[in-house]
Image (cartoon, rainbow, N blue to C red):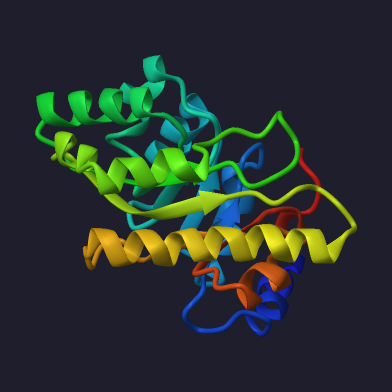
Amino acid sequence: MTEIQEKITSLRQQLPDHVRLVCVSKFHSEETILEAYEAGERDFGESRAQELVRKAAALPKDIRWHFIGSLQTNKVKMVVPTAYLIHSVDSVRLLEAINNYATKNNLNSRVLLEIHIAEETTKQGFKPDEVLEIFTSGVWKNYPNVQICGLMGMATFSADTVKIQREFKTLHSLFLQIKSIFLNENFSELSMGMTNDFHLAIEEGSTCVRIGSLIFGERC
C-alpha cells in the first residue's frame, strides 16, 4: 500500500458513510490521482478548466470530476461537458451562461450554488438572501438545463472553532430552508469542509467534504 493509499484508508475511517469524499487533485499529477483511484476513490476535484479537461481525457472514464474553482463564463464550454458536479456557481450570470451552453448542446449540468459565509471578502458566493430569492421567486425555473443539487460554502480560515462552527451552522440552516421551499429530491448536497475543518463541517450537516493536502500532501 502506498503512502497516499494509507492516508485514504485513515481518512475513510473518520468519515460517516453518507459523506462523499472529493479528493482535491488540483496541481497533482495523473500518476498521483491513479494511486487514489486504485484505493477506490472516484470523486476528484479540480479548479482550473484546462487541467480538468486534460486529466479527464487521460484518466479512467468512471471518475466523477468536481469543478471546485472560480468559474469564468468564458470557460463554461470547457467545464460543463466534463464536470460531474460544479461546486462554485456564485452568480445568476454564471447560472445563465451554464444553462445557455447546456441547452445549445443538449446537456444537463449539475451544480451547487456557492454561498458566502466567511468573513474574508476574498471569498465569493451568493448572500443568503440572494440565493433564497432564486427559489422563492421561482427564478430557478429559467434554467431548465441546470440541475441545482445543493449548496457549497467555505468557512473563514481561522483557529476559532466556534466561529467556523457558527458559519457552517448558518449554511446548513439555509440549506434546510431552501430544501423546504424547493421540494426537489435532487437538492441533497451540502458541500462544506476541507482539510482543516472537515470534522466541524460533518458535525454541522455536511454531505460532501473536499480534501487535498491530507491525502496528496502539499501542492506540487
